[in-house]
Length: 290
Image 1 (tube, helix red, strand yellow):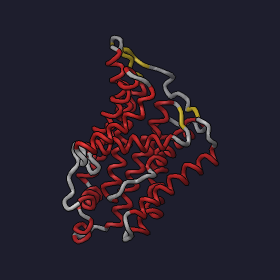
Image 2 (cartoon, helix red, strand yellow):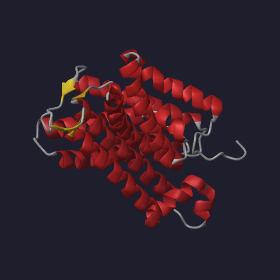
Image 3 (cartoon, one colour):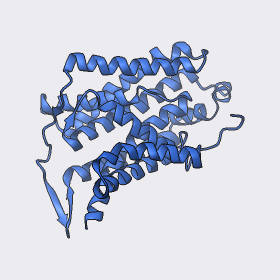
């Protein structure tokens, strides 16, 4: 039963990682570059949830909506500062810009809010139900419902709306998309903002799951999102989701059966193994000519 309990915990944690990775994958798909500021976006989403719940006494749904909006706006700002001015510059420049923005946001948060960990009040006061010897908390069910719901909504958005089709076209070939009338710059901004907003929601969920937030949590979150996306394939949203769930389960089993110190090591092992065995990820498409 210990294994099943760790499996349930790993699935919950993996769903949060999956949402982080989906946002990361959306950004990579439209921009074509890794975003090193994604961890800080997740961190700021978590702090948004913290302030909504701790000081304003709002419910979880409102905290998620505000977290989505705040990080969507942040995504627009990052796009304006790090990508749009350098769209014709060498690829290294926007990458360096995201590293700089990551450091800036982390340091600014520490200066304004301090370096200490903040505790988020428990929303369901430890409520749970038991199946045999397995305990499933209310918050675990809520997280699963939210992540699955957002994933299905994203799928419908990408395949059933004009904006979604534009995002898919830009992710496949920017020049061809421009030739058929797609506003590439506007679409990239929308895609980047959407990816950040999904990251912000995952930050809110991460904060309420562990009942805490802190300014340096973005570094670990960024690594988990990147590992999950590499596992599934940088260009594959379903692959990124699978990667997140696999990472969450692997971490919990590793911590449960080995040692808590293996939690972050597992993410690096996954990255190294996938890059050696299948660099494009389990569901990523190979890019011709690169």
